[in-house]
Image 1 (cartoon, rainbow, N blue to C red):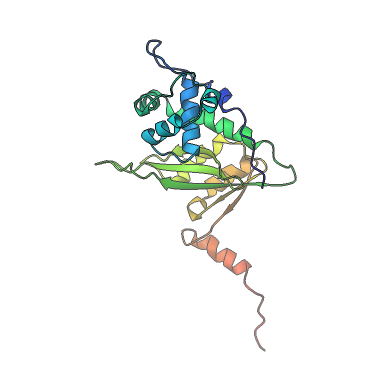
Image 2: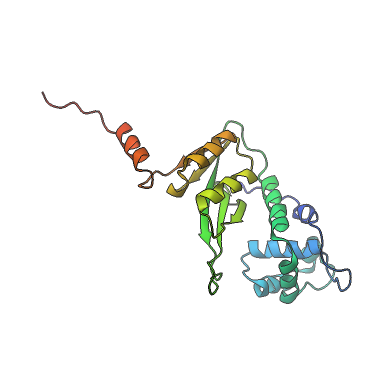
Length: 222
């Protein structure tokens, strides 16, 4: 499998409004966000690790990211992300990922998995752990879109909103038994997509019907 072209990440990140005050800016927001994205893609986890990764880059790569002086430290990265609307950052990265994937072969279907995961280290006293529902491309493993699952709902209900964030024609959405729900499957079909989900005991009637369809023909002895 050939890797997809990276595209121009800076173009997409530059579309995010800079909410910082004019005073005290040492780096462009686009450069800092590009450093964060590339640091995470290189395996850095957390502000300190990302800052360390940035400070180990050679000058040419730093300038390619948009830095024209010594890269920021962990505190500056944290301050930026705590003020930046997560939705705008995620939307820019999602558009970059989708653009990098390019157009698919019209003769082939593109498999997209939907699944939820709880984030490590997010459990707080008297509050639930942060749980994210994601859509990711089977072929490349790239996350195409994600959103937080509200405490008052579940993955199946959150999927109805998440599925609106990407174009579904020529795509097959795969999922576990959680997403074997009439409204989820109907929305995928209405949006021009296809689905392939697991059927288990949470849908006993459907499970029995499928089992019957796949039973080997049997002729009793006379």
